[in-house]
Each structure stands twice: as structure tokens, then as C-alpha cells.
Image 1 (cartoon, rainbow, N blue to C red):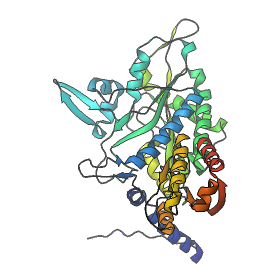
Image 2: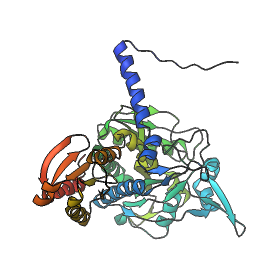
Image 3: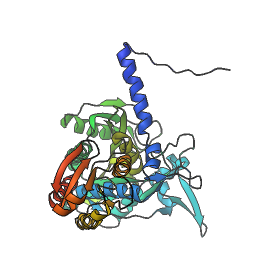
Image 4: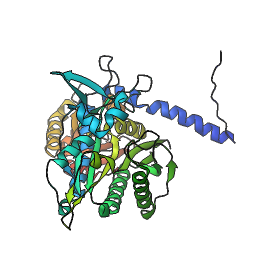
Length: 424
């Protein structure tokens, strides 16, 4: 019998100590542990590798979707909704049945075989092909938050980072060949804006080229790989090559970020696809009146929202920025006499759209603060007799501690701006 033994070595004791410290920090930040402690999500054997998002987790999830939706409006995307279950004929046309069936779920109804969609792109091809398009209509950018299902072996599933049901900030861009570089440049700008918002650093970029099992000719792959490499060069983004790691229908750029523990995570992708427009016979009218074949760009920024949320929990240690936190402010009255003003303060915070918890329990202030700290609430407002009389609040921050006495209106205005502007 053989045993596999893994080892690692460091040049100095200091490097070893830093490595061990990161391992301990990673344990403390494990999103499976924190998700349970913070009441964000849970897993159950009745639905393997499929998370149940609790109210607080759903709040974070929805805030992520809202943020991306706002950027879609800014960058000219149109959101669409597509079916969950489609006839297998669609997946044969797209090539998924031949190249991806082992990762799909199938069902039968009325003697027809259907597949639960593992991705949105074939449905978007049907939508594009449902109407005639002129070159003046392009680019068309379809964004879809549809739920996807992919069969992952039980041995590789892991918390939120490898699940069987998920949603992507998924979009497909149909454009002319002349528009590819502009669309890629706009996507890279959007990507950078998002990653900067979350405080990620050290983005790494890789170009994944043609796999052994693929659709299309070498000439098509040459053109697609050239388009992606030129876009990266023009954007001044150094990149490495991942030979053979592209999707079966086209090469892709993969974007990695570093979290707070300097661990790399692959998030966004950008793929050039000549094949699906060909297989679905998609066309548009060129300026000369002839028919042109659109190019299809597949792109995501956060990737799977489930996976991104798991990464974000570990990146922040569960202490989400105020704009994203499920509870943004906890109001902690010291005495029953302060309850009336505390209740009014909570109502005024809610009227501004802030997420607030009012703790009226007959507990010590120390216990209330401790529980709010464990819940990673960004701000705590302590209200005693003096504060209630003066209509002020004593502000505490979960990291910075006591921020002093402030007027209620002044604090609520500052927190509203912080949440609206998504300050970290």
C-alpha cells in the first residue's frame, strides 16, 4: 500500500510562520462555518450541493444582483428571462448534448426528452433568432440571472464554491466583427469597476485556448484566440496561457483576483464564440444589404453568485461592507426609558431604506454589543437617557470602536450615503 504525502518548505522561519498564520486565518474565515454562524445559508441532504439561503443570506444575494443590475443599465445591457427546461433538440443543436451531457440533468414528459439548462447561451440564441436584425441594431447585449443546474460529482462539491444549482451574472453580446474590440474594452472596464468596489487586488489574467474536444475548424479557433489576445494587449493586461482549457465552443479569458489572504480565485470570464451563431444560423443585415453572421461574446464578472458569495464571506471574514450587510445598524437602548426614542430611530432608519435591528431585550449593554459584534453588524447605536433627551446616538463601529455622540439625523444621512455610494 502506498500513501501520498504532501509537504511544503520555506526559506525562513518568518515565511513558515506567515504560512501557518494564513492557514489558521483561513479556518476562521471558512464560509461554511461563518455562513452557519451568521445565519446566511444552510445545506441539507435532501438537496445535495444545493444551498438554502436564509433571510439574511438572501438579502446579501439580492444586493449583489441589484448592484450588477445598476451597472447593466449604465453599460447598455437588456435583461431577459428564459425557460429552465428545454427540449434536448436545442442542446443537440448547440453541441452541449454531444460535449457536455455528463454534466446535465434530463427529464421526460409526454414522450419528449428535456434537459434542465446548465447555461443560458442556447436560449439567448433562440431569442436573437426570433427577430430580424440590422447592423444598426448591434450590439445586442442580453443579461440573464436565470437559475442553472449542473451535475457535479459529490467528491468535488464544496460549500458554496462548487454547487449543483446556481445563478450567474451571465450575459451574451451579439455584435459585428468590427465591434469585437470595442465590446471587449467596455467589458474590461466594467470588470475593473466591479472588482475595485469589493477591494480585490492583484488581478491575474489567463487565456485558455482550444481543448481537444471542441467544435469548429482550426481557422475559426485561430481567429477567436487572436481576437482575445489582441484585446488584452490593447488593454495593457499581461496574461498567461492555459493551453487546452477553453470551452468546447470557443477560447476564453479567465480573471483571477486575490482575496484578503492573498489566495487566488477565478471569477470573471470572456469568451469569443463563432460556433453557436453558425449552428443556430443567426444573421443580421449588413450595410450592403447582404447577410452577416454575428459574433457571440459570452461574459460573466462575478461568475456564479453562489461561489462569489462564498469567496466574499471568506474575503471579508463575514464582515460585509455596510452597503451589503444584511443588518446595517443595530440600535441598543440602555434602559427602558430610552425605548421610545430607540423605536423612533429604528423607524426613521427604515424609512430611509436602511436595514436595522432594534434590540429591546432586557439584557446588559455589554451583552447586546457583543451579540451585534458577533453578527458582524457594521454600526451600533447606543441610546441612554442623555441620548434620548438630546435626540442623539452614541455610535460604535464594529472595527473602529467608539465614534462618539452624533445627531441621529447626521448619522442616518452619513450611513445612507455610504450605502448608496458603496463605500467599503
